[in-house]
Image 1 (tube, helix red, strand yellow):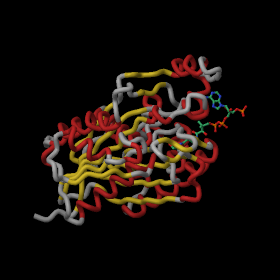
Image 2 (tube, helix red, strand yellow):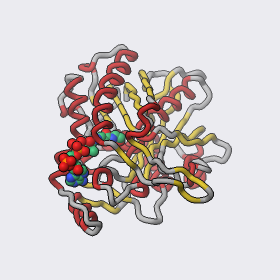
Image 3 (cartoon, helix red, strand yellow):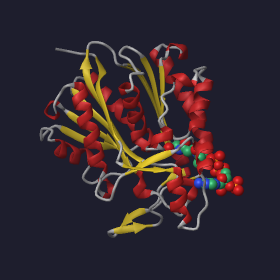
Image 4 (cartoon, protein in one colour):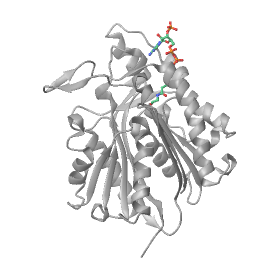
Length: 329
Ligand code: UT7
């Protein structure tokens, strides 16, 4: 039986138990002699809290929780999966070796021999992973694919750098795509500009069993902000054009959850009211590759996002890499 499209069969997500408010970060940074405030974090980013994994929790553990919830929602078992694609910049193992997707396959009890690999496109990772899954399904190679975004950014945050450590959190989101006669993923647009790789990166390198250079996340916030606003507008219009749609036909915008001001700017430029934007940044912070599938799952489980509605997903981040997808849910 041939099927020409891929559609979302189910979603799931997971946030680690440990929830830190802005005030918790104020207290934590004070111990390092750094000043910040709930007011600064909230007004500059929209973030009010974030979740951090405990020392024993790995990216794969967060991913497995999200994956199980997605399997339940899709009413299938791990054994039905043909492929697991996991987007992360904080893999379980140094260099992502072995891939966290392989660890998840094992922990989930998915059938050995099914395919599994990681995708590295930082905060655009989920958009990239989703497009790969869609292409595999359309080509007839696989019928059921789990796409996961999972991160433990708390492990690469420098708590001596107040400009970054207050912005990120940990979490995981998962989506099951399956072959379908009805279109689900309507269009995809992906881009990258490696010349901008230094404005958001972990500069260090693995060497001789250790790390050479700075192993923490570094960011030129203003440069990232400006570029993000510009490319997100472009890629949103590109994905809509490819789908043959206009912004007013969209039911929901599900942007990467980095900064409420960036989301407001994108919505304004697309003529969409903030009522049509799924916003989770206040509670999640920036969870990089996990942020879009987390927001998608929250939107679906809250009852906001309904079957047959049209969604625009868009992500941007380190690389510099960005992407968008138009989806009929
Ligand atoms: O996931 C990938 C995508 N990432 C993003 O989209 C992030 C994009 N960038 C941003 O969201 C914003 O640039 C930030 C939220 C990171 C920063 O907001 P901003 O309005 O660009 O602030 P700024 O970097 O220009 O800093 C303004 C001031 C500075 O002080 P001076 O130089 O004006 O005296 C900073 O030193 O705020 C200071 N500052 C802080 N103050 C209190 C920086 N971090 C903090 C802090 N608490 N945590």
